[in-house]
Image (tube, rainbow, N blue to C red; front, side):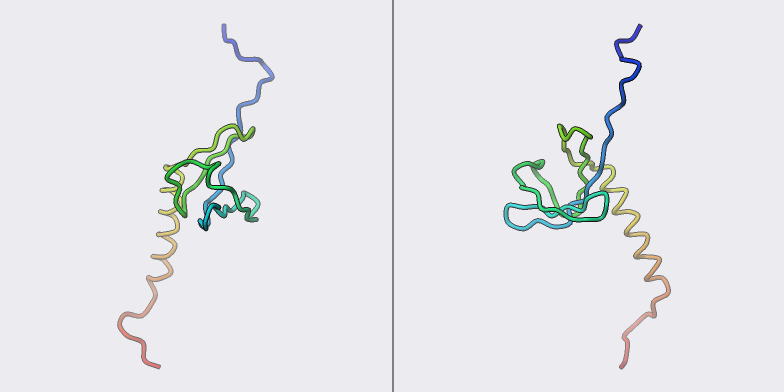
Length: 94
């Protein structure tokens, strides 16, 4: 027998990306594409630009999602390499 309530919903996790850090604030990109400035003191220690934060739907937990950060950085790197694949080699003369 389990203790879970039949109508209990699992916690929903949202991700925000740290776009920049300035002074005591981190500028984050929210899931809808807008940005907001959050106090660094309310965020995990060691936070860096580009980190992905996982936030549960009650806002009770905010942590750096290292796996999601690496995944997104890998996708961005692949996209950049694809763009550069057709670029000419050597110096460009004007």
